[in-house]
Length: 439
Image (tube, rainbow, N blue to C red; front, side):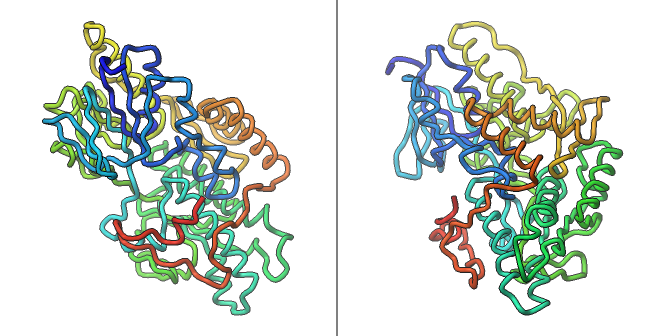
């Protein structure tokens, strides 16, 4: 093993696709991730909204590669790269040398210069984020049940989702269904159907990546579920008491951020150019300019298509990049010509609106409604890892579709009902109880 070409892969959806596609290749692989699990992020919002359990969308990495002796997994975090020495620096203090390096380190939330909003408006990128949001949603109803102050009850039963891309739309739809169809009858002092779900988008319409007719359909569908959609007005402030939308203040105790992302510092590690979102601007073969043995893929990379538009930061794109890199690395190891530049093949845009409707767009093909929802579900089940996960998710969805009941509604963290969420410290500080207990 020691004499084989050493490939170091750092995290990510595309990184695991690369490792999977290199099975049987004459290469030694070190996979570095700061978490011990692989997360199917497209369904993370369903963990946040009590539809799925964490174990249904995440799998232990070591278990995935237990039968791959050429793969070594390290639970650590990369904090720097030395391209000259061909090493990566780990948070634990160690160094790992590489022959080829692939960075698939993803992205985190972007608050457009207002990082102080993060404690009160968490984003959705990790299991910890999802369980934090889920806890806040459920505790809002519980605290409203205890409150005797009408104004406080109103604020507790107001849920604000900022950003109306697919994640924001999907979150708002399921929160509304939770309040309108799942929880009524379970409380004695409040009517959960009086909850207000507000979806805020600074742009002129929701789901801007879809055609205007599908965007309009999604808006009408959300409004039928009871979601109030506000477009064309930005959020100007977020506090523990609520949000300011334009010049108007809305009292709200639960706020979710779905408005933007910021790439990992991979470009800074490598000393190469980045776009406005911090994504490393890579060559057509996904390599870092001037560093032919270093590749950047997934949400970390800015990759341009032939039409001049960037490759979208979605899971299918990352998987395609991982598969492409596997072909390129195999060709290099065999001394064959490279497969040429990476070409992204768009497999369609999908978004759900609640548990019975969705929209699908693939070129001229457009579909909406219940049939689109079923096709959306089939597509996502296909991408899950393992028969057990596919069966579990399919059963959860079927149960919810038939009964309207969400099963993942346990509140397991330490905070008492009377407490508000503690503030989250700045990056580098001690972890909050919110994040320690999450999961």
